[in-house]
Length: 417
Image (cartoon, rainbow, N blue to C red):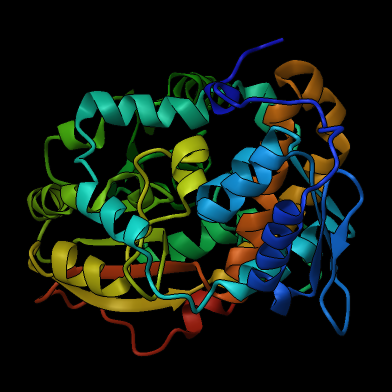
């Protein structure tokens, strides 16, 4: 069994055999009141339960007294920790219960813990950035093959039609990015955070550009290089295992899909300096595709600890005022694809579920439950609007690359299906 940092430190305890005390029942009632709008009840380890009035969504099953206390004291962290450790479980449809509980907290004011997390966030220095990325992405390509599309595109897809399959929607997303950038044969492109290489290869194959693609995940770069060699694109796409901050030269196009979240807000100024340095003027342009928020606040505490250490989902205001404007660039277009990401995550979750026995055998029960929760809770976050998915197109302020309409971007996307 391959050990993962994600599951390290997760303490699994046997279900308590003691009877619930009056204090336990009082605490359970308090927990239930905090999630009452979700229609979710609470059941303790001895079968004692408390339920909301009205429609019933499901139940939280609390397996021991320590779990009850922990989730009351720090729900933002402990729901995930305790579910992974089998100390909390769910009765009812898991996705429905998770979304219902997520809706309860969507309008909650920022907590003191969240304010502290924003204040204490550290810059993602090169060494820390490598460690954070490898924590999530170097789990083995075979793990991601179990539930991603064949190209291993691990970012929001674009669904030109409601019936589009995941594979089709990912190709449509790749082409949407290229169309927004108005790529022309012979142009040079830098891609920051290239994943398994799907976008870089699509740009070279379909639009005739030359790409330098940066990534600090060893397993992803190895996969991408082999694919480029196999597809005869090795002379047009250079995959570089290095931090994008070490780039040199000037390019016609800068593109980053799903990387900005890992930059960290304290590194936005360095990204602005890089954009200012590498984008050729006046005809250059760029696109950032990233998870964002409407209000500045950190990601969920459990997600920061177990899934994406060092990550931060910025607001549009932060991106424009701290990256694009200091780089002396102008925003040309903004699009929010959050509902497309909710559907993407639903497709990933539906593929992950039948693969759970294999995931469990490779990584253990705690890892499997953590990823089940991560995919489900992320889907809920985009569905209800607590997370957004922005695409921001930009260019030097003097560039003559502003479109009259968006028609040419979208007119032929449906024809890809």
